Length: 248
Image (tube, rainbow, N blue to C red; front, side, top):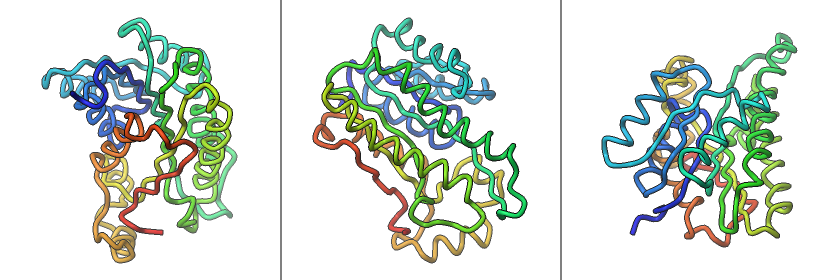
């Protein structure tokens, strides 16, 4: 039997990149998936189509997770379409890099609103519907250990996500709800290509420092999410799994 048969998942920011990889991986193991997107309806629809073409169940729903009402709508879609919620993946995120001298309030508020407030609001909306054995998976980043120059705000948001993961693991543990984080390293996605990371000197330098000798792929992260969502990870909570090919 598939590891997630009968389960229902919400994946935020799932129209492309890591989120799309996670949505497809969860669906391949039997979960019905709510594919959330902020702006790319075509991307979300393509993810849903890829899932349904292989016999899976998925629906797309628009929603800005940094808005409480919209975050609730995303969660409610799982309940209305599939009748329950077992897995929440807080993947929505934005990033910009800049030296401290040129960092702006706008950058700070944009990144903290989506990366941190969005994680809190979506989890707040989901928790009343999660039962024993449910899994919350927060997508953080390896930047919290690599500590890249010119990433103070972005790294700050992901440091907050790491801390929130630990707090919620303690808070929700008595209800047998597990909360863990995945901290990816450099992953080849539409976003990292558009940002000029892939094919750059930065990527070459990162690969040179990565014991496994390559950048990550969305399916690398998707398979870890399946593990954390499944009963295989029943004794794990409050963990940060750095998925970087060994880059520290």
